[in-house]
Image (cartoon, rainbow, N blue to C red; front, side, top):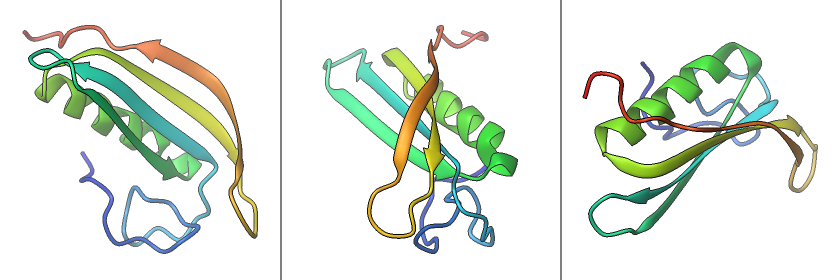
Length: 101
């Protein structure tokens, strides 16, 4: 399992510090907390090699923090050399409650 992204190079994969591949996917987790109903949104950009790791990490984090109504959306990203990349959502799922409890 990977850790939350920290020090990564601009325009590179956020999943692993040493990865220099350009991001071609963005995974976004949106959820409301069970206790207070606060909205939460977190997103990571990753290369194709690390997309599965990012999706697993975001889902595990949502389960561990008991976030309600969590939705995980994956976007295909066209890396732009300057400015914001263009993105197209190609998958969005509601995360069920954690399988083990």
